[in-house]
Image (cartoon, rainbow, N blue to C red; front, side, top):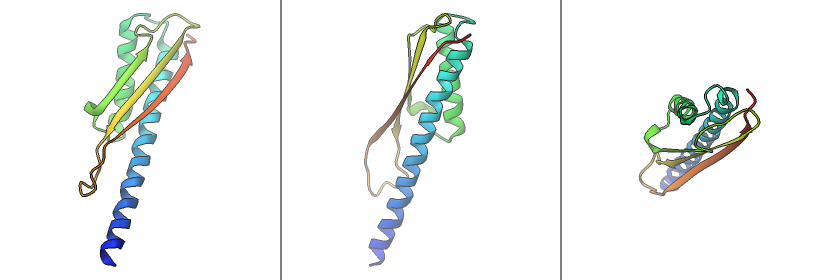
Length: 117
């Protein structure tokens, strides 16, 4: 009975952490999109996509994610002029807190916006 209780408690903790990590990944994708739509036409070049990646990494690092597990895709690769659409996709290889129940999950989120400035 005690083992079952411990298993349920650890499962609840792991699932809660998984939801927290997913929320952070989704927020990071939105932050990257916001950066792109505000700063896109300032420098329509691959450097703007680098700024988007930096914005995503900054928010994800603040959310206590391992930034080396992030995979960030900015489409198009060079953020363009006002009126163009930018899509930011962020995926994260989730690392479970408890290793007793090993599982592999890749969490992802996509955000899209129109460059305004």
